[in-house]
Amino acid sequence: MLMPITFFIILYQFCFSVCSTETNISQTIWKRLSPVCATIPVRVKVDPSAVVFNVDSRFYSIGQGASLSFVFRHNLSNPVLKLFAKELAPAYFRVGGTKSNFLVFCDDEEVCEDGPGYSNITFSGKVWDEINTFVKDAGWNLVFTVNAFLRTPDNKWDPSNLIKLLEYSSKRGYKLDFELGNEPNAYFHKFNKTITPEQNAEDFKSFKAILKQYNNYQDSLLIGPDVTAMVKYETYKPLLGMKADKYLSSFLDNVGDTIDVTSSHFYYCDHKDHVMPSNFTSLQILDIFSRNAKTLRRLVHQHRPSGKYRTWIGESGDVAGGGLKNFSDRFASGMVWLDKLGIGALNDIEVFIREVFLDDGRGLIDPDIFPHVDYWSAVLFRRLVGKETLKVSYTQSTLELKRLRLYAHCTRTAGSSYHYQPGAVTIFGVNFNKEETVELLLDVGDIDQFLLTPVRPNNILSRYGALNGVELALNNGSVPEMSPQPVVGNPIMPQGSMGFFVLKNADFKICKS
Image 1 (spheres, rainbow, N blue to C red):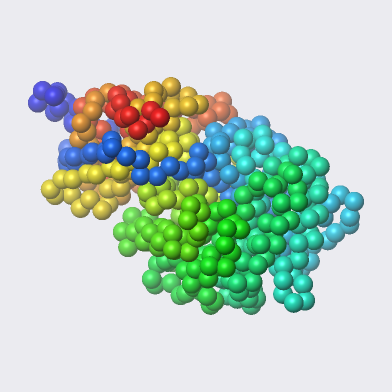
Image 2: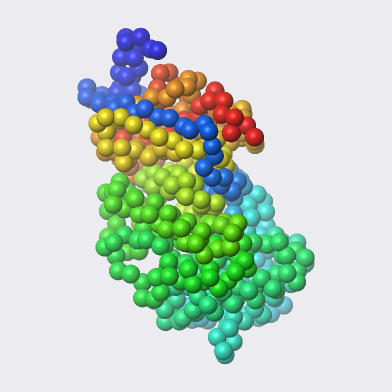
């Protein structure tokens, strides 16, 4: 236990760094400090008795739009881009979204042209090769969303273009997993088209039968139906079409064991023009995903065959709809994402696919091949958080704890650059409080801290972030080492911060198997 004078010095040093109003974190020089800094202690306990759920090793995965503009606008062979991608491996890379239902494969022996608007977006064998090469070099697995709008006169899915793609891909040994269509319950709303859940289930059965004909794709995952969110922010108008929960239930009742994974999308709200900075800390908005995840889990367990409960969030963004410049490229976006990942793992979400990897204003990487601030939290999540989800509880007498979000997993040890030993535990989370700083009281010592804060304190819309007080920046074009800081006393989470805390000597038996 720290002596009172020692604790006072540590607390003073913390206030000196966190409560200052003018900072140059990159040089850790503090020019001015505020004399007031309230720190509230919170008792934190992690249950060592059981694993709640095992996520996939590719839990934090990445998506990209099916317009394929990322191929045409960027050089996918860029070594710096590949370096950034490898830092997030292993991961799934989903090519999908609204325009997936207009993608048509055109091999290099054909002459094909795009149609107007959404009518057709053709992609060549050369483009397909570029995507597959990039994914393989990154250490990712490609999930491709197949066009569901190619249909016969009696409104059954026409698989002829898929067969052409499979023939081409099989010859080149490309490893693929598949979806069919994107948000089918919203087709009427977006395109004035309707594919009933019953017919959609029959289309998936046809898809699975075709995959069984190819040695390379007999074991490929078939993922669906990629409906919209179960629950959305109440002030936004519902889609014109079948509600997601009703569509999903009927689809699952008819598809049997054809699909390998049940998938749903999640966005807090659709209308980007209503987004405000306060949305990123609003409990009314942040709590929507927990309700959504619980509803999804309940429906999957009710309508899937026993043991077929694998569930993904196949597409998701932050609170700015599908993403919005000056919001999604800021520190706050990483806070929202880290919270969703923690909630998802507690609710049996095996894989969580983030929109998007490469894009101006809403991607992890911008078009100049420069990482946005929440890329760093994604890297730390990949390096530190293992598959085993643990139950964590925390209590204290005065703080409104709903704004403090803490989660726990066994620490990733295999393949990690930090060389932690099996038995270690990683607590991670977000302090969404606007004023209260939190001191985490833990029963174990020897803790490594990875504390992420905006470069300018209390500014969660900052473009830049700091790790343990030092501004994060590329190191000669490479990802920095991102070293931990040993904790003296107890970990401190200032308001508007994210943190990963590795309990090196937790010695949990459930984290050793």
